[in-house]
Amino acid sequence: MNHTAYEEDFIPWVETQAALLRDRKFDLLDIPNLNEELTSMASHIRHQLSSRLCVLEVHLLKYRYQPLRKSRSWRKTMLEQRSRIELLIRRYPSLRHDLADEAEGVYPTAARKAARETGLAQAVLPTTLPFTPAELLDFDFEP
Image 1 (tube, rainbow, N blue to C red):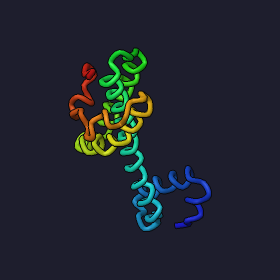
Image 2 (image 1 turned 120 degrees about the vertical axis):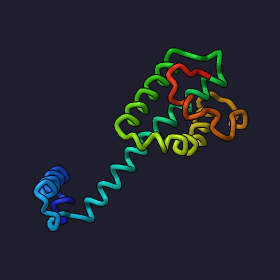
Image 3 (image 1 turned 90 degrees about the vertical axis):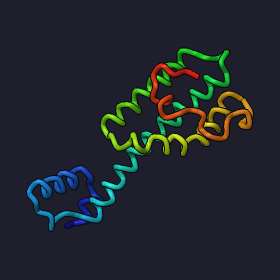
């Protein structure tokens, strides 16, 4: 397959690859670039989950450790992130199995951000994720 097509204009390349798959012309597929793109797609979807979990965790920490500063904006952000996480999991059910690991993986970043945004010392915040996966997904949970 002409690798320059991939490099020159992605959209026609994708359309060509889809047509080749549909027509079962497997020997004409651009396997190396298809592999790269499919791997990248999965990585991007996981990144979306991690990013939304991080934002949610920051706001849950702020909510817990600055209870007098709770705001509608914080609640709105938590609702939005939970809604987007729920949508991701509905669209990609296997993400539910990754939720706990992804949530724990982004927690150190979330704790740093929460400390920076609140002005609290990071030592005040737990060193490990203080919320369960069920709490993270629970639209009614507010610490």
